[in-house]
Amino acid sequence: MKALVTGFEPFGGESVNPALEAVLRLPLVLDALEIATAPLPSVFGRALVALEDALVTTRPDIVLCVGQAGGRAELSLERVAINVDDARIPDNDGQQPIDRPVVVGGPAAYFATLPIKAAVAALREAGLPAAVSNSAGTFLCNHVFYGLMNEAAAGGRFRGGFLHVPYLPSQAARVPGAPSMALEQIVEGIAIILQVAATRADDLAVSEGALS
Image 1: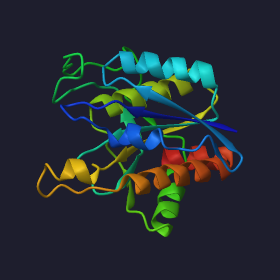
Image 2 (image 1 turned 135 degrees about the vertical axis):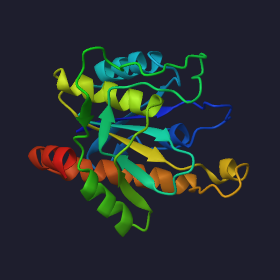
Image 3 (image 1 turned 90 degrees about the vertical axis):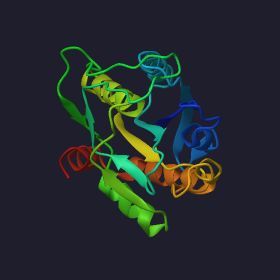
Image 4 (image 1 turned 60 degrees about the vertical axis):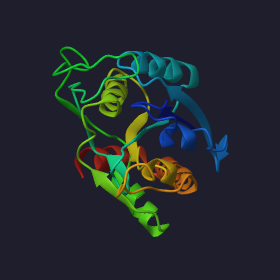
């Protein structure tokens, strides 16, 4: 089996993005799972082009997109992506879409097809704070999550989902009171999610991710 894991470049004035830093530290092989990684630009539209290119190149069985969620204290596996771009800040190209669909004419929402609750249970068992989240926001993370699941719905033969990760300690040091997580823990968490996804049967993964 092959997994594709993506992470965003820094945005919002930050010099680092924990998502990309963690993704770039993943091993090439995890048990029987081959891992390919791809950086995504923090730009509406261009991020989806980069994602589509990576999907074509790698032809993965599992796709996990990873993004930063400053202010969250847990590894948050997202349940649902919604068809709206509504940016509170500009992206790295200065775009700030308001109330715009990710895909014109697309459905209102897509559910993740990774086994999100099983993965959260495994993360907690490993001593990592984790939770299922019901909102991926309306910025670039949701933009890419929706685009990913739209590709799956259009015939992509992969299971997909999205993980939000907290700030790194170095980032939280500049935001008094903000929670953080060590980079090593984020890398470990991503690896656990991939292992769970690789060992779950397709029918269970789809039903659990979509309906639980």
